[in-house]
Amino acid sequence: MSRDSARLVELAARGGEPVVGDLGDSRSLDRACEGVTQIVSTANSFMGSGPTSPTRVDVAGYQRLLDAARRAGVARIVHVSASWVSPDSTVDYFRVKALVDDVIRRSGLPYVLLKPAALLDVWVNMVVQEVKAGRPARIFGDGTRTASYIATEDVAEFAVRILALRDVVNEEIEVGGPRSLSQNQLVDLIEASLGVPIRRQKIPRLVLLAAATVLRPFNELLARLMSLGAWSASADHLVADWQGPAIRFGVQPMTAEAFLRPRA
Ligand SMILES: NC(=O)c1ccc[n+]([C@@H]2O[C@H](COP(=O)([O-])OP(=O)(O)OC[C@H]3O[C@@H](n4cnc5c(N)ncnc54)[C@H](OP(=O)(O)O)[C@@H]3O)[C@@H](O)[C@H]2O)c1
Image (cartoon, rainbow, N blue to C red):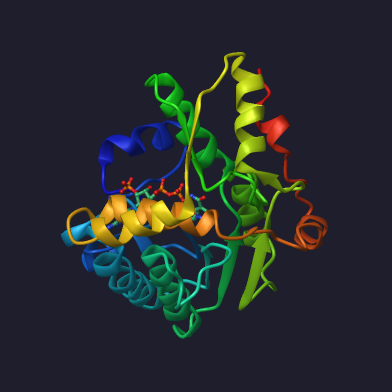
């Protein structure tokens, strides 16, 4: 499902049955749920602000989706949440994701909350975009805090494996990559893979926190990004038992090195 029909052309070409839908439009969600037995959901308004802010769209949107799912007799929802979401997080988006998790838990619909660590694709892409634009890579804090980065492809594989196992119900499953890496180490690996030196700009955590507070009334998205940076610089964010789900579902999450290696 996408709000944009142009994005669905490739899926249709691959044999999918895409539908145009919007979390804000119940009728489109009814159409999307028609004949569906299981839902995998990732939709979120992280990049939104004002009327499209995650604080306005996501919770009500998921309530609409769950209502539509119940009307259509959907048997289970596998929702991509995130590790570390919490109702008292300093990052507004993590608070919203915690509320969405709760809406799903209370919906009465059988669910699985799949909770990945930081997505490699997103964090690598952020650095590559800066390099392409001739800007330094932004490092949050001193860049030494670590995370269990996992590739989106591997999160998708977990979702696919879970869809095939009907007895996985009302569970919350944290997934992460096989090696924790700091942001400095991740940029080192990107540098080696691109074969060009990458300039780095370290932004102290206190600056990120202050910027988030000052910017919030004027630029919600930038404030969100700053608070996310401050959060990532505040502690290690590891998935301690990444091996348990890997063995249970038969998914071998790739390392950042493997992710960055050119593939045929
Ligand atoms: N980034 C990370 O490091 C990280 C870490 C852990 C977990 N996660 C979670 O992983 C999932 C995927 O993350 P991502 O960064 O790849 O997501 P993303 O690129 O930001 O994707 C957002 C998706 O949400 C859809 N969407 C937004 N508003 C919508 C609306 N009103 N109605 C219907 N669809 C809407 C968009 O679809 P269209 O624009 O096509 O309509 C888009 O495909 C998310 O749930 C995220 O919270 C991310």
